[in-house]
Image (tube, rainbow over all chains, first blue to last red):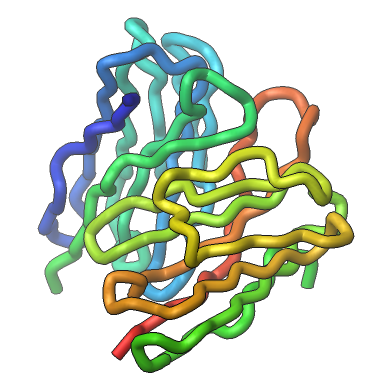
Length: 112
Length: 116
């Protein structure tokens, strides 16, 4: 079945550093979604991407829809402590519009 | 508050007991989803409703699990004869079908189930 592979699994960075993470799939997606999950909470949608090559920003976050439609990237600039959490990529399974599958997440830790 | 509400936030139960969780979606959303999330994993799809119709169930949803959305508004997820492997975060999400581009779901804060 379809799978989303996220890397890295976890990151330890210093406050103020930029962060880059990615998500790949063996199959084509026509929508890419990036969510963030804080401890003990549900995921919250950060950015949605709908076109190959699209680059979209949300504050310090920037995400890109890969040209091959099989990958996506999320960058965070000038990280701050509240960026700590788990970042998930997600997309519609079998390109349906009614069900989303998730990667396993990238865990971001910020060192004091 | 117009977000997705889940109750309870935490549930500790003894193995073999039945538990029921409730989800209240965003009122104008006609689709409601249940996902399960175990430690170190992303959310895994369990089932979803469009209005009151249950349109799909994952093979993860064994016979001990049942979900309902009787009036197309709130939903309940019941687990009978709980097992330790059922310990997880159960997430509910809602969305509006036919709203154009897939804009993602709005998730609730989840119900953390611990089976002891």
